[in-house]
Image (cartoon, rainbow, N blue to C red; front, side, top):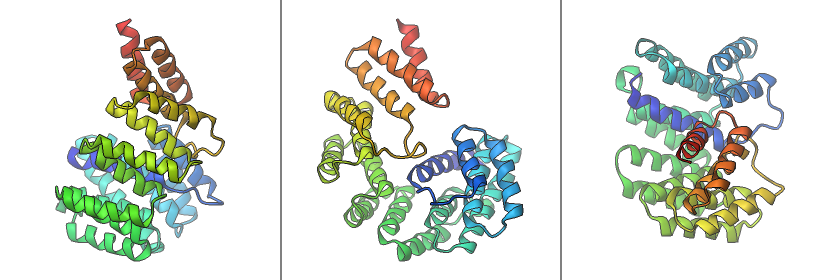
Length: 298
């Protein structure tokens, strides 16, 4: 699998895992796979997933997460092995959709595969559009989200904006929709609109911890509204109903706090925040880089 496929696949896997709800009574193997992938122990996740599939071959969610593990293996593999792992990824997601046609997570992953993979590995814009249409029949807001993803792949920013605006209108509190729209505004450097969006979300959903985190993240990424971003992360830290660890780690919140503090010139506090981020989440490579860079500069 070429690197041009590997990078979007990784982004897709992370994004969907972040937005994915946790089932009420998940299979223990599924829980273990998710934890192992979060710890970047990909080979172990593959082993657990393949063992679980042999025991429960008709479990769509196991096939979904095994596909995600295969996708990560494809990214890690050498050039000769990537095509094989990519094929396993596609086959696992196709099996998940076959077993549960209403599983929009699997359809999103499969759609992104079809969008990014070359034809020789099963990629197809028509197949991607077919998945988007199916998603839309199940969930209209997520259907618009899928259409926006396809538009962006085709370098149609206007089309993506139209689709994602409609997705936000249909499902203003949906995390996956919010994050796609936020990422679009960030990528387009429309920072005033970005902050207006998240501040509006905070007014509409004052008890939503994810919103407060995103205000802080926006400040850290753009370098604007730094004090407001810091205050939002402070509010996030005091909120009792936080997203699950998979959706948002404590390490990520500390890392963004460190970035804001560094931009404010408060380097001692920033270094302490970066260190707290690494302690909370040792796999947060970007936080480690920021910690080591700032420590070396002192």
